[in-house]
Length: 75
Image (cartoon, rainbow, N blue to C red; front, side, top):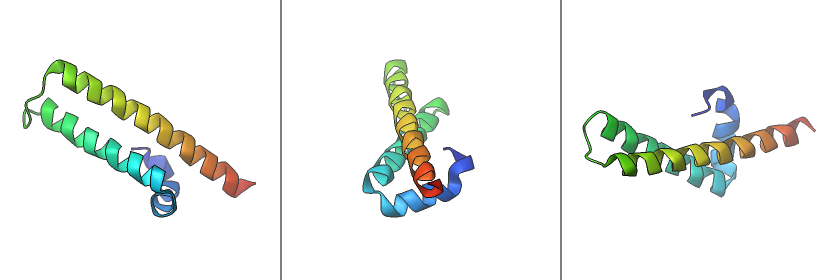
């Protein structure tokens, strides 16, 4: 997720508990949806859709935190 911000992600995971939590939750959902898409887990289409929407919301929130962090370092 958001590989172009690797440095910021690494720093935020260590210093911001909320960011670390949403990052971990995103990765967990990513693994679950990948497993379902590849047939390793049996989930309904609705369950997969809900997980993918939640994953996207978490990614958006993470990006906002990353950009705020980056802007605070540049100021």
